[in-house]
Length: 84
Image 1 (tube, rainbow, N blue to C red):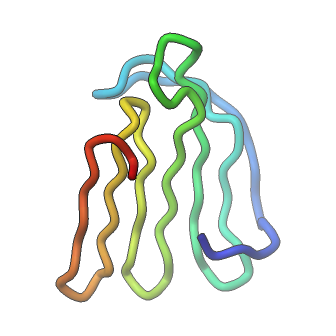
Image 2: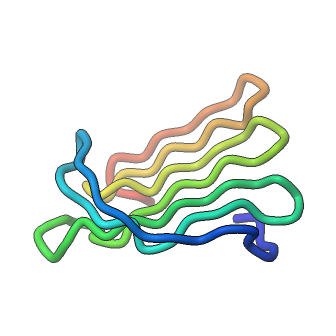
Image 3: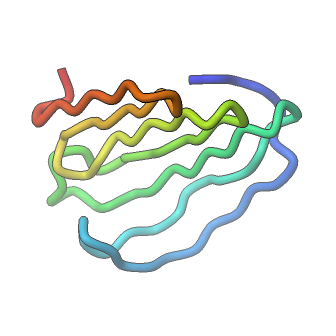
């Protein structure tokens, strides 16, 4: 994950394909990379899931069901059902 200082942060709630969630943090760092962390509660395999997208077009998802997905933005992608 690319690190940097956040230009914004916040919280909120919503629902999606993974169920109801609360946004625990989100923002964009000084390099233009976006992140969002969500809490899906104790019933989710991965209750504190997150995603980030980078200014180079790559992005990564750590999903509430424990799966992960990465896309390089240039043709390579990988998916893992159990996050390993």
